[in-house]
Length: 87
Length: 205
Image 1 (cartoon, rainbow over the protein chains, first blue to last red):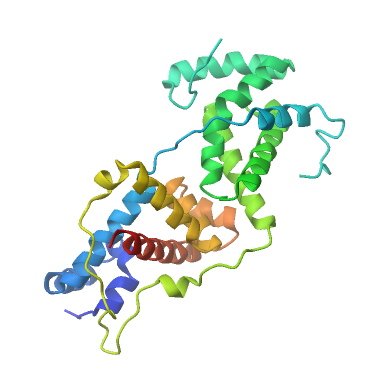
Image 2: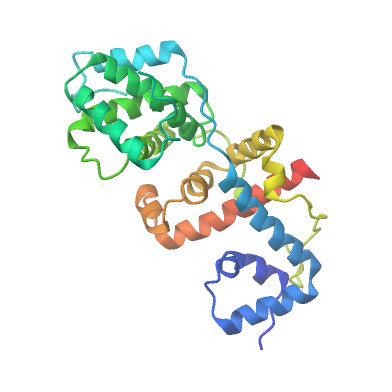
């Protein structure tokens, strides 16, 4: 079985995490992870980072009334609906 | 009548409320337009702020998004929820605004990626943080910290991470939105995650 180092593991960590690599290559990654605590930590915190980004809740905030008015007023401008309307 | 949070409604309730609102919108009823902005705007703004950190830019993008939506109302066929349709328009408006801006000085992605010794071992690995995402996300300060870290990513990488990991848009569609190949999306996403991991590590350790 080919061996890999930390550089290669981290370079292709996304494939490993997504289980998109072939069985032989995955076995090489597993073998490296079994003996390298730094890479195990890296893998765990890489996955936690993705969970943190994905888990961020949508936190709506109230819109300023002036912004609501500006949006509604823009709809009523004579140029609304023209493709050349500036933004 | 108050609609409440339209993004939190069940599917059948939301469809029914969408149809009712669309009747008013297509009739040009001013109160329906105001209801659309007040009910859906806060969530759209939240999505936009994940792409644009500048408040003025975010407000401009929200206005762009609503004007695009108003123009396209006649073609909205109800194949998705109004909330889903508006969310996508908001994200697109934010990306358009981001592209049109002069780029601010930003970090090099390489400065946020791990480095290695000649023998292939990582250079200077730090002790790993131990808290899991669920416990970290339970704290408002940590959520704010994660958002700040995402904002610090170089724009190309931030956009990729937002589209793929936060908006959960497929790689192929993300590639079309960003005008790059699916392979480039994959590479950018992996680098963005590594860079975000580095930034979060610096905050937590």
